[in-house]
Image 1 (tube, rainbow, N blue to C red):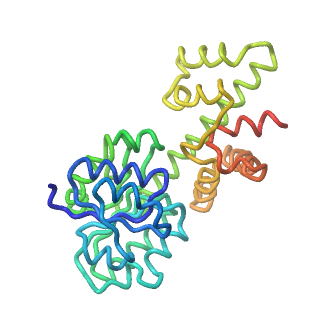
Image 2 (image 1 turned 90 degrees about the vertical axis):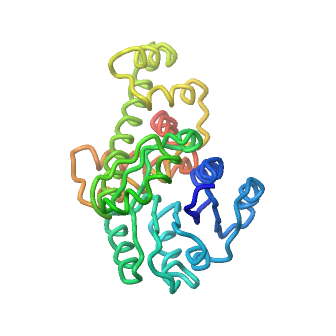
Length: 286
């Protein structure tokens, strides 16, 4: 049994497999989720359940949050029986949710006031890498806190990179998701242009993935395009949120506005809960 006791808040598509990997690595894990039904299979796998975020922090060495947006994370900190209401000091809180750099710095300040350690650690990767323990973890922390949490990161990811202090991890995540959006938009536009000019999507995807333009995302998303099926590994609505956060954080590159507008339009068309690759559906309906 690993000696660190881990608390976990947020059991969605990413949080659930990440907790399972910690359990497999023999960490003691206590979970908290507002929807208690989401705890059931993890409790069956050996996790315990907490009654509130504050009680979770009281019971654990490290508490990790993996939630959908800034408001959800702030509510877990500041709500009734939230993490900030605990009277316990010296513990470590790691936010692995994608939030704005400003929110990460705000969380760090809340923790500093409570004599708690805070680590900003969003991840690059979707459900399959989460299941495989192969996420890329983008850490904002001082070096001693990073080393303390490293055994946890080693289970959850294939690499953890300490890029700076709190907020810098969030900036790295917004930057990589901007590149993700560009890749998805370009892939969709290329396949649709080829099809309109007599090249099958099967042939075009082979050309892409056998050539210098191939990358991880073009290979991963090819089956969805071929099957015209987009179950969410990373929901399109979350990329819309991340692109908005990037704009608010100062990204003013030439392609950010058309990219954001394209994905926002797809969300408005009802594609938000589908995978990010469903952008091709929206573009095809022009």
